[in-house]
Length: 272
Image (cartoon, rainbow, N blue to C red):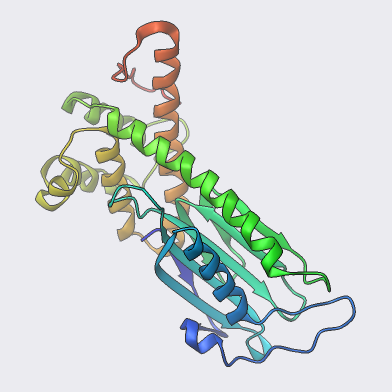
């Protein structure tokens, strides 16, 4: 899963079909409420026209007459490898003038009715007020163009991690550095054994990620983070993305100096 949606008190999980019958207030000269079902359907339909598949969707509504909408969409990008189901879009909106129509894209997205709205390496796709001139058919296509641009960058980073070979010694060094560094551990320290087990010994994980690369190690971290509480998953997911981004940046900097090699020697506590 690439997204997490949390609904607390006074907020209720809904299916997409259940959004269809919800009340939408009358607009005014300067304010235009958008039916929740219309917003979600327009977004999903435009994704489909671009070849983007929604593999999981979650929604929640709250407030008077279910005026507030929160949602997450897990997406599969066109022409991507089969295991590239790792991007998501978070959405939120309100027909009580408390929120704009907003959408964020990231490799991991966290949306909560307490107004948490974020993602690792996230990018704001859409942020529009409910003005009288708001037209979903005009604002959603550019948002999807931006999503595809961002997804292309994520795919390039994944390709780089797949090409980044790791010896067992390098993998252990990276794991060690991720838990002992001046910025604080990427994951809680009790996860260290889980990371080691997932990368080196877990048969199911090894079957899915047989090559010993930075991508395999990254997936050991993203698997381990699933055992944490949802709010902690969001925070730690961001840290995981930053950690592996720094590893890649250091490798590229090394290659740019003329080594011409993807595999680089990582010095302890020097990837920060």
